[in-house]
Amino acid sequence: SALRVRALKPEMVLQLETNDVMALWSFFSGAKRRVGIRRQTFGRLFNLHNALQEGGQSALLFYLGFLDALGEEADGFRTELFAAEKKVPARPPVVFIHPGARLAERLWPAACWVELIALIRKQYPQVKIRIARSRFDAAVCAELFALVPRSWHCEWREIHDFAGLCAATADASLALTLDSAPRHVAAAYDIPTVSLLAHWIVKDWGIYDDARHGVVLSHTARPDYGIHTIPVAAVFAEFVKRFGKSGRRRKK
Image (cartoon, rainbow, N blue to C red; front, top):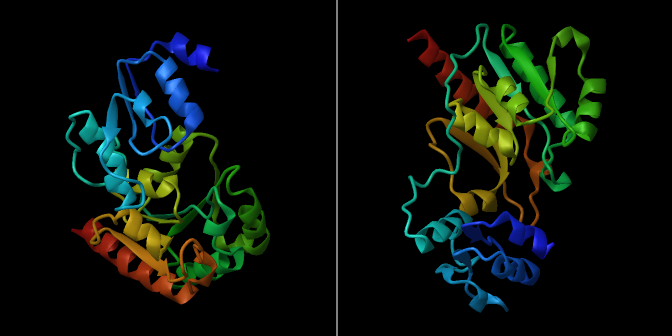
């Protein structure tokens, strides 16, 4: 409630989206600096405004506009987190797979994951394949677990919180992800990634260093993610490209 927000006595409030109720709560908070979107019903309740309009440019630049309003300079234009500790990739190399996402339309079919894992296992029999599963992955992981032969010796890692995700990711040699938090965590640990994304996601958020982080795109019209249309062969080709570079770096 507004009273509970008031009791927090915040020094600053950032409202990142247009929402009348949240605008009122922001005002009732009593914060000295209240940053919101200018063009909204209660925009006048904020004393600082994001100069950029949502949808008028990349989402990354839009959110950085809240820093501009505070007079703060963005530390670069990368979207990943920055991990405090870097870990040396495990030997034999570990391929970390996170097959889930919060939204069903961002998922890749379980059968495609199985086909991809089979290709990896055939060409790189020495690698360890670690598959994460959490409450966001329950359905697709249940299918995967039923389809993946035990003879492939995949490691299933239960993820219950952010610390567990970091622990499962940090020693990987390469991460295969969707549009989800593990993509950012892998980048934070400077782990090469191969991500399956809708083409308009890349436009909205920009891409990571292309030398380290590859993307395989669907080309369906917005707002359809179209992840299910991405062919296994394209993902495997990107995997071979990134994993090969990772292997060469380790030898050096």
